[in-house]
Structures are given as C-alpha cells and as structure tokens.
Length: 151
Image (cartoon, rainbow, N blue to C red; front, side, top):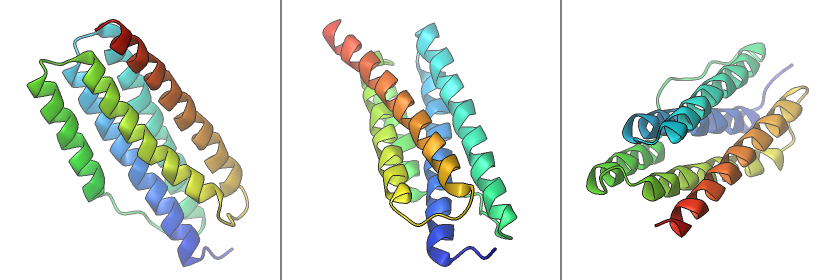
C-alpha cells in the first residue's frame, strides 16, 4: 500500500512531537527535585519513546523512513524548560506549566492528524496515542493546579 505525502507528513509531525515530548520530559525529570514528579516525567519520556517506535514502524511498513532530528519549535521548548528551571530554583509549578504547554502542542498535532484520512491500522494507533497524550496532559494539568494552590 502506498503512503501519500500528506499521510507521511502527518506521521512525521507526530513523531517529531513525540521526540520533543520525550526530550522535554527527560529534561524535566533531571531538573525537578520532587521524587514523584521525577519518576512521572521519566515514565512519560519512556512512553513517548515507545510511541515514536510505533509510528516509525508504521512508516517502515509503507517503505518510508523518518529522520532523527527534533523540531526547532521543540528545541525552543526544551531550552525554555531549562531556563525556567535554572531561574526559579527548580520551581515545581513552573516546570509543570512548561510540561503542560508541551503537551498542548502534542494534543494539537494529534487532533489535526485524526482529522485526516489515515490508512489501515494507522488510525487506531494514532487514536490510542492521542488518548495517552490527553491523559498525560490532564494529569500534568491537575498536578499544576495543585501546585498553584499550594504556592
């Protein structure tokens, strides 16, 4: 089965969002002192790595490859997390705000992907990943809200 350019571009964009998320969560896990958040961010980084693999496997089934670079937007997002962490002495609320913002970008990419005509088993994979990203986003948002109330 042939993968058209629009579908390839869509899958590639999701892979990039997941790469950015994996790197962002890894950075956040290194910068945060709270053990529970450190473990949570590590878990989400691993989750994104597995999502990347799943999407890349789908590209391979269509005879396509994915390049290994992160996006400029994602690089800027990771740098912002690093800066906020350094400037705020690893302020939990601000790290959570940045993680939520990164998840906002990922959710947007998944919603846009689900509006496309996706072939075969690609659509249920993307739907499942969307729900995982949404759950992570909502969990981070609830932690952020709790951190705001406690500050």
